[in-house]
Image 1: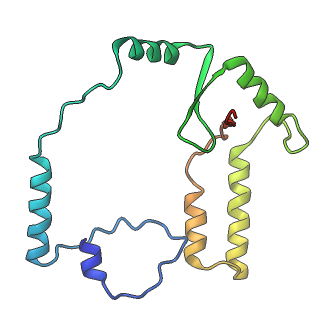
Image 2: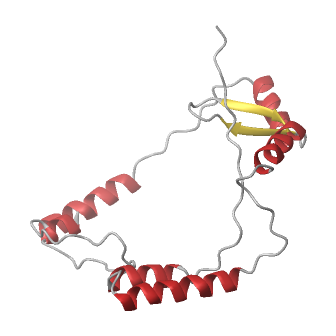
Image 3: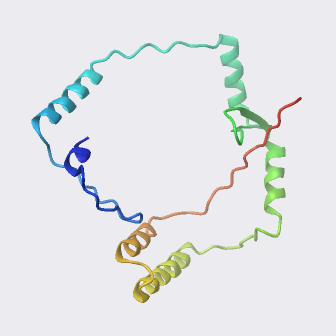
Length: 163
């Protein structure tokens, strides 16, 4: 709310690739500050309702046993809020089937530092040639310094309605 109050009417376009500044807006007018303080105070003094279970004890223990079963994988379905329970062996076989195609290549070793160095060199070259501006250069160069690791593969199970 402070930002909206302070920068209302400011039509400066925000660069899509920018490093977060960590800017905290200064205190504004007393009316807005009082409103924010009173709202925080009112929310913190509200009583939180006690959790009420909507499952029976046997249903809850059944779910717990499914969650603790190492031979099962429980995933969200691809398009709905449904939950799918899969056999772990079939899940891993499906992952292998999808990865063993012409679209993927198995890497024996992977040098992440060399890749990061190549990306930084390429980005610096783009900036030197004027292909990207300083904000984009700074975003790509600084965002690349976090220690990322290799990605993880997740298979989204497809479900079909029975007619």
